[in-house]
Length: 123
Image (cartoon, rainbow, N blue to C red; front, side, top):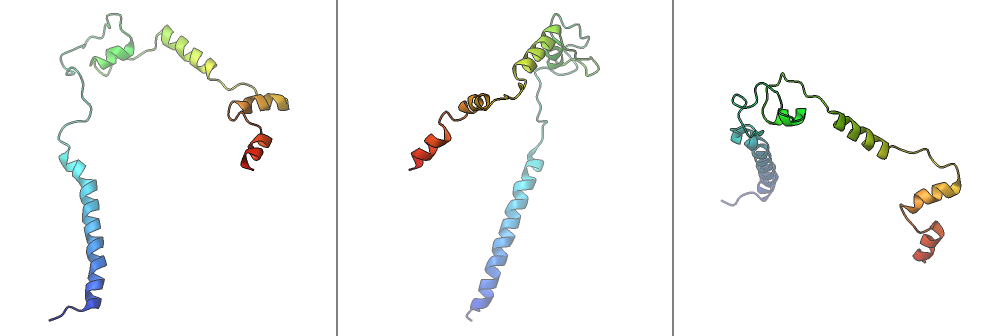
């Protein structure tokens, strides 16, 4: 009994699609079945360390990372605010130049060669 060549050709794509569907579902569902512990690990358990939140001279972020209770507020220090203001002023956008030469100076930082020089390079 010889298999029909047309029948075997039609089952090959069906088998390939079925195999791809199985692999895709295993790939997507396998991490959910393997996850047995939380992804976030801490140094100390929440119940034992840092319950009162006096800080001992530490900032609010250090206190939170020690495992203090979630009801303790985290506040920014004056140093944090000064650092943020410095970053904002350093990275602020300046007023755009009003002259063509001013724009050219800005463009020089991106590509130091003029358009005419670039076109000459292509020849």
